[in-house]
Length: 330
Length: 291
Image 1 (cartoon, each protein chain N blue to C red):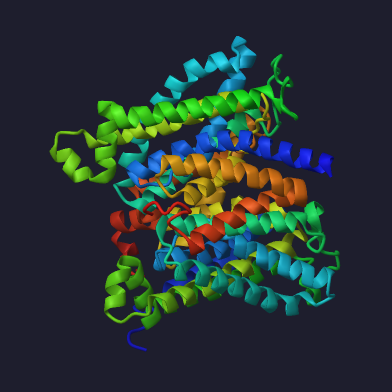
Image 2: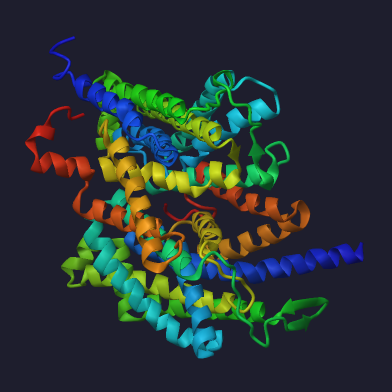
């Protein structure tokens, strides 16, 4: 490996992960740990989106399709087939990846790009949502309840910190994977396809294969987030697993954090969900009652502002004003 | 057997009537796509906004939807014009991906602001003719739906006249075909873009006024319509007005018949499957307009 830990870019990842790992010692309240765990789940889903859209330029509006496959996969494997969740986890991730491959094959083979690709992914997520809501195998509108049996061997933890560290290890793995991909030949092809697909093709890049690889990885990563979600809340239904909320948050986090960067999804998820909590608390205090949807209004405004004024997200802005952040750029 | 045929016939007729309103919604979307070459993701949320506007006009001012249409249509034209010119264009720096994200942002804001104000309750307005029916041959058809059907045809005809005959219409068509050339001829492209967006948005106000006597409204209702509208636009060929009209009627009938034979919840699936199959295997639409 040329250069030290820091010039290779792995150093900042290790520092950030270490800082996140000691966080539960400072904030041990259950609500804080629940919130942090949720942030990591959204981060993981967003990392999947970022790999496909941030690096590959293929904007999906329906990452809920993969998230839901992971969530339903791990839940149904336990409830319907009696599998151990630790065994169901890799199978569900594979299911998400396979969904990615199939969805990608269908739409990339039809040469769908840009808005068309966004619409197709959205439609797939909606089809899955309606099917999951209607089929008796998936529990219909009542959803799936994972039986409570709290033990580590059963992927249910008495200590909320255990879940947090487990989710963090997933996020850390994908941070390293993303950084590695960004510096690999595959990553270079991916960026080439994003910047100019026709030019990349002319230079001998097999664009279809590159995009398929990206959407497969992306589907697997986001499915892993769905698995964690199912195991955290032990209940899912069609709107939670395949609903538009996760498609939106998976794309908002990287855009707000910094699209196509290693840390973008993490920074965006922290900021987004943190801001969401602050907004909800503020309006509850202001109006003396919870106001549904108000946090999402702020997200929408933030999305437009980011597109208009900070196309490289918050990390991009930081980089511009603080040269210290210039290092570790993907 | 006769009874079954009657049920089939009435499902068919109802499908056509609902399809007409779908067509009207799709008309706005396809017009915007045809001229600006963007997919307006906020179309569904804007429809919801229009439906709530009809609701408020009725509850607060006692305005009948069929009267409110004459106030709301120009109002939504202005709204669309301003949205395109003041928000979408400056925020997206002319990049297609950005436009998609900005309109997604607009739709998130509208939908959730409505949720914050009106909560998730489903509401309807109470008009004396809400449940009246017309007897046409062997069929009993809901009067508001028949009115909506006729009104849609009138609006489509007016829109066609506007595009074919008026100077603005000619400018719109010129910009749609070749915006640089149009600009060189002295056409204000930014203005024409905003006008088109305004017309597309105004179609939603009309659709909302026609829908409200028979439909319910809640902050998420637009989502149900938006994918239907996208399906129609894709089916009819992106940017084609005749295609949108035909596509709307087809989708209305498909939804009604699949609802009849497969039940309500799977009836929706039919629409999405058509959408996916057309987009994946025949992206130029059934009528072969240019994609």
